[in-house]
Length: 187
Ligand SMILES: Cc1cc2nc3c(=O)[nH]c(=O)nc-3n(C[C@H](O)[C@H](O)[C@H](O)COP(=O)(O)O)c2cc1C
Image (cartoon, rainbow, N blue to C red; front, side):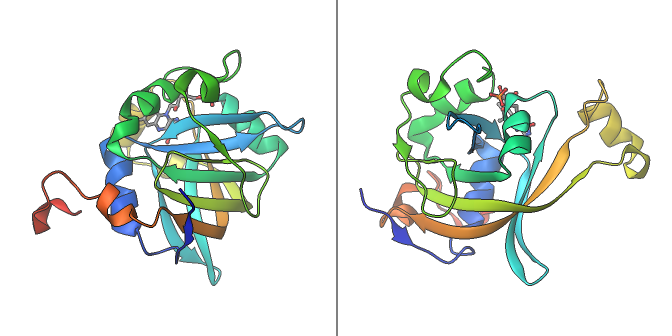
């Protein structure tokens, strides 16, 4: 299906909801052109320094982290619930020694502005170029969050990716509509 250009805010609510429900798919690429995909559950879209930005949190233990350090570009892809199995798979298997694209049956969609590919079967796509990153500072986090999220001190690196392209399936709203479409279920 050919994708249509969108404003980066067009599917904000749907993107956040899918991130919280099952996760989104972040792609990265190595210098020699091999793509990788991992599931992300934390992040947000916003406006910083007068630019549209995706903020994602990646732990140094992820293979994707080494890719993001090599090529500071990524895409974020919003899957429909039809991809739940692939999303779960990409969230527990590492691309260090597996080809997750192939094993999860995900098709590469060449990106418009960045080197990592988008994922054809997903519904909404954001292409991002890292303009800033910083490491999470444990000294300024509440103890409850440290206990909950960082029992092994595996603190995230936070990447701020300027959104340089955003596009979606023409029927994205329909594909991402929640099963229970009551107004209270939207956020
Ligand atoms: C629902 C879900 C959300 C996740 N969110 C994140 C995240 O935001 N940041 C992160 O570093 N890992 C996250 N993970 C874990 C990675 O997706 C997982 O460790 C993956 O295997 C890493 O792949 P890689 O080693 O190929 O990069 C999440 C996993 C799941 C299942």
